[in-house]
Image (cartoon, rainbow, N blue to C red; front, side, top):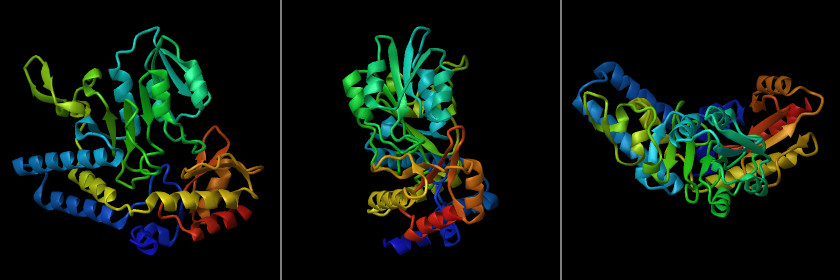
Amino acid sequence: MTFADARKLFPVLETIAYLNAGTFGPLAEPVARAQAESLEHDLVRGRSGLDYFEETMALRAELRGAFASLVGADVEQVALTGSTSDGCAIVLRGLGLEPGDEIVTTTDEHFGLLGPVGASGVTVVVVEPDPEAILAAVSPRTRLIATSQVLWTTGAVLPLAEVRERSGVPVLADGAQSVGAVPSTSAGVDFLTISGQKWLCGPDATGALVVTDPARLAVTSPSYFAQASHRPDGTYEPQDGARRFEAGWWSQASLRGMLAALELRPAWWFERAWDAAERCRELLLPRVEVLTPPVRSTLVAFRPGDEEPAALVSRLFAAGVHVRELPGRGLVRVSCGWWTSDEDLDRLAAALDG
């Protein structure tokens, strides 16, 4: 696939400099077509019957395998979720945390992780997003280190497998800004969340959770998908592996759309995204205060000077340049994907200049 071919997959790029995959990735024509065809089938033939149910279950199994391959996990370690937030909540509820336990996290986490951490009822230790600071905060009471592989604020990359090895403490890695953006693996961490709709350009409300050892995590909100069999009193035999954590149904449209999205990526996807982010950083440095360090990441965050971030984002949006304000932080964030062109970045620079 050439870069020109890749651009043609995303009709939105014909008119918009789409630089917000850290929130939602652009929707590709094959993904939309797969969803539309599935919905048309449901409209005409219905959503019932044994064949339909078995086909849906087969699609779920296929998608677990695709997510597993993406991050080097075993398929039995993968559960389908609705978001990275869902995955974080599954882990925090299932650890059996008690008063007196501690969780170490950082100042630069998204509420999708912080919400479940805060609701856990244990002591939360917040440090700067630096490996040495994280390790220094670990105590005999620390039950979990919960942080991002790539920070949603600046795009900095944290070496979480190293942190896990040196601390000996289980690590929950929020992969919202890493999986699909930078080379990511579940190896070396205990839990990894995956977002489907961001860098992977899948349908809304899609994601996965990788659990290295599913047996050590309790199921606290069992759905129909958690059980292999059950009895009238509600006791049940759990599904093998991480399937026991799956919370709900995915439509065939979402399943087929996500599978189509995972087939889109060209072999050069990481390099192209990294190069685009580096060019973006170079264009921004003379214009604004850039906070993103020169690392292999796809996010570039900046402070816009005298202009309010929300006002700037609205002004850029009106100019056909889509970026993201980071509320409460005074920052604007640019997301560069493998579909990002030099022209997209030139439009951003021109719009900043006003």
